[in-house]
Image (cartoon, rainbow, N blue to C red; front, side, top):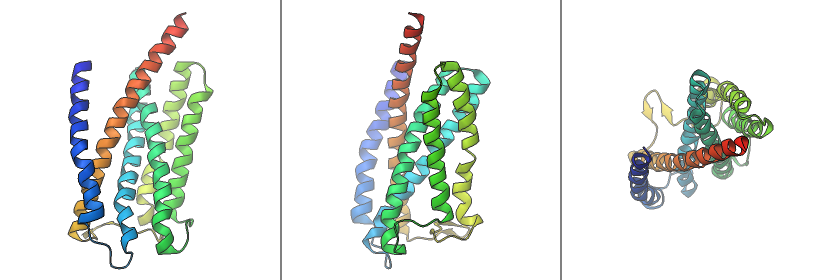
Length: 225
């Protein structure tokens, strides 16, 4: 099993080694500068890719939490913990790259727009999730509490996604019913960037899960002693 996982890791890492430089080339060379926003628009591809992987990470937390409550297997708790940590990192980068993109366009670093506000709330929810993991001493109790919290906290993920459709917002809408409102070169660059960031997420998740497994084994040894 370990050899199979190692093979998958090498394949994904090899693919990422190809796609990541391609994404950078697309962002800085291939894609044209937007007529109105200019060169600052290039941060868009990174920002969107980070946002999509933030939602992916918290979706993994949601699914793994449900599976833990259903099956009671600690491996699902390990996956949920790993994904939550990565989700907070990606969400933090979303909240950093967003204002960098917004300042030249909106004239302010931050505004209490629906998308921005719900994203900040999402970040706070999963920071609290990670803090909860350090509060409970009993591993089983901690896993149950965090699973419930991870499931409830996920409610904000679809709110973040649909916020630009449900409320009046100045945040740009990329996906419209008529299609993606961008030039073909920008669409291709966006998909390549999302693939590159997705591969990076999978690699980091696999590594973090391995660390979590080792930590759990260490806790069992300490408890037995």
